[in-house]
Length: 304
Length: 264
Image (cartoon, rainbow over all chains, first blue to last red; front, top):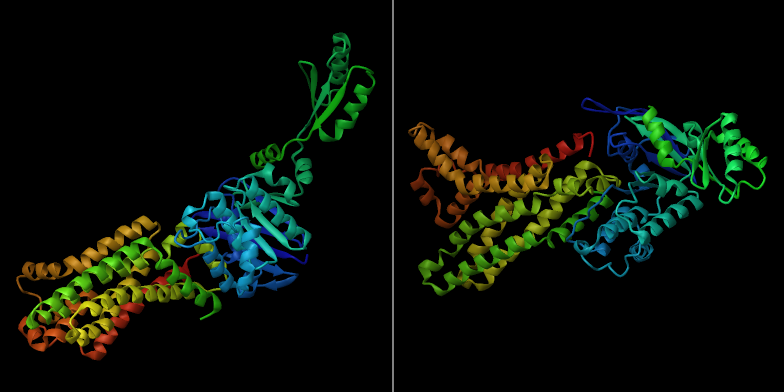
């Protein structure tokens, strides 16, 4: 592992164990998404990495070397807080100039960053007049200003319109392609799924599951939904096909108008397709639906 | 101070001088101060000499208000906007953030006080110039003491609206009602309080200390002697120490509180 790693992070806040022996790593070129219900410990874990929460215990590594959350560590991270609301008295340009000075970034980089997040035209306007999405894009601009090795994004999709989402996706893609890292929390699983490499499901301060979307689907053991289009086929032949599939006994078979819905385990999908192939001329088309990540998430969190 | 701290000082100055409440209170101070200056200019010599003391009265009321308006949201405002975490995710210590905020907002206070006293200076009788110049230092100290107090309130409160309410109460208590409170205490104890205790109560409040020091500067020790507090007037060293405590202790506690916080 040559990226960022935190091991055994534990944080107790009053009577609540906010993090309980949590380990997380982000490898170069990878984007990791933290998901979980409110209070799962996602933001606390991000804040431990940023030095905003002092853990009772945690071991930090960067590029395989034991490290501390010190100035050098912080210089390598760009952060977008959740629902950030910058001072309304300043303009976007003034705000970015401050963060450029604070991070030792040349002022000449401020303009291109404003352009990147689509705020060039509004750069000299007071933030007071910015919409929620514009403020979020400004926050993203602050996060990427110093070209950090690790982008930490807390609920980055909140308040973003299509244009803003486009900016976010392009930033995440650029960080992955350039071998840098992204760590994000979200409640928008469906929206983020395709942009992230790994998903880490948390609940009550613990990691429940971790892996790619496919890994999680497998581990959730949820059935695939297979739709067989039987429109125009003789009713008797359709019933015969249904009977054959029911006798097979590996899933739930239901006739829905001119279609048959079969819910079968993922590894039995091919077997079902083979069964229907014995009934020539009955099935006009097949559509396989994987369980959505939201359903997988609910299963994982609900089962814990 | 590191790069982040230095950048934060200028950021705070810029941000505060664009705050509408800061601008309104500063302009009000400047307007009233220039009114006092103009009145003194048109009056006879005896009345003109009252320009300085009148400005002291005005400054003792408004400068603490300017300072509290400037500082009440320093920490709690950042926390409420979710920018405190962003600020502290930069390579900067928590104590340094408090210090940079104190310095940046102090510069804004200097601008506000400069605007007020400068306006009075420009319109008043040239003969009163030295008296007005003598006001600058103590008036700034008064403002800085309240600025530091506002910073502490900002660190202690969890909501900006609560901090705003608390600073209004503090302003009323320390600026308006404090002297009445001391008088009430004297009446309640039927004069049982020693002169030293009364003096300590008066000098323990930065607004009281400012008024007494300015009274001494403009009216001389005879006036204080008539009030029976000349003997207890702190010397230069003690006065500097009192102002230093008012400036550093609240801000210091603010820094310690933020530095000790487990979660920001």
